[in-house]
Amino acid sequence: MAPTIERIQPAAVIAVLSRDNRPYYLCQLLGWGLYGSLLSALAISQGQAAGGAVLVSAVWSGTGLAGTHVFRTYTKRRPWRTVPQLAVRLVFAAVLIPATMVFLQTATSELVWRFTGENDPRHSSILVHFISAETVTIVWCALYLSVHEVRRRQAVEVEALRLALVAQVAQYHALRSQLNPHFLFNCLNSLRELIRDDPERAERVVTELAELLRYTLRADRVETVPLREEIHAVRQYLSLEKVRFEERLRLRFEIDPGTLDVPVPPMLVQTLAENALKHGVAKLAEGGELVIRAHRKERQLEILLTNPGSVSSDAGSTGVGLGNARERLRLVYGGAASLRLHDDSGHGVEASVRIPLGDKQEPA
Image (cartoon, rainbow, N blue to C red; front, side, top):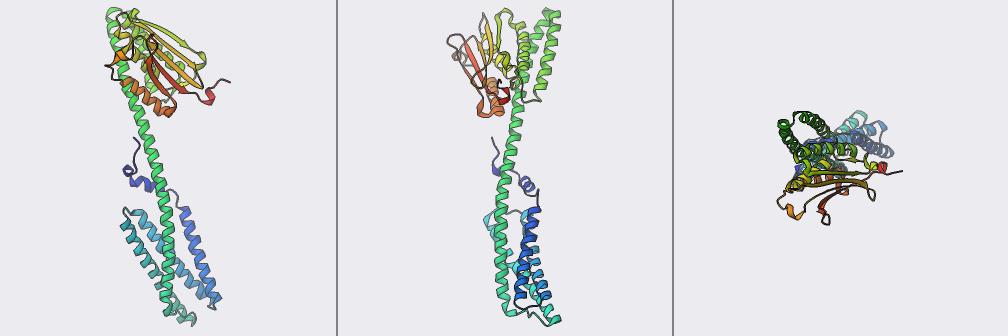
């Protein structure tokens, strides 16, 4: 199941939001610098001395820059969780930052007036300055919080996708680990009986079993393998099972050579073959024939396994093997692949797998 937003760690989202601060600093410097420059130009146009106007405007915009940066830093370190928390922060920012801007501007204007005799601070306009500073602060907070919320939602989505991918990979490996012990158990049972009855043949079987184990170990590290490798492993597996079933198990392979390089999930066909033996041949005293076919059909690879028996007669089956095979197909191909089991017109049970062919797998 894909992770919900509530289950995502806040630290992971904050890490995503903090990867690149350069746009923020660039906007801060350009925005407040342009604002201070406009204030300086306006003051000079009204007859104030250039030096005093530039100094006062620099203090005004510099205080605004520092105050909003403190607000931003606090917001990142202590993210709000409720609307009231956000409202309280906005109220404090809308009061403290303008008050500090007006206080430092007034103090700077006072000093300039005392030393130069120009640029009267005009204490009567302090309220106007406060309202102006408050307006600028509120606009800044609104812009910053809007951008922050958009980025936060994007970070949550990215983290959710990452966790979903990690969960799917873990689920995929877990499914394969469920298949391998069952496969090994059947092989070892066959070998145990053979060691007692035919030691020489048992030695050959051990070699085949070693090759199969090597294949399963490699299968745990890759998502797909060429069909030729999977079919080779299936032949080895069925060779081992023939020791147990002897003449009750008859095999027929009809593999289109043009399909041998098509990638398939490892242990997929082997799982279906194991399922066919367990619920088909093994339940019949006379045994039966297991037929494995593979060919291209409508831009898909179709793999068919036919075995004696019927779907309705297998009511006691838990379906774990087929369920795992379907889930592995889903994890690798999404909804583009399918696995179906149905009665084959009196010939037995047919398992049908369809896997989409990529562009590079299509014939020229």
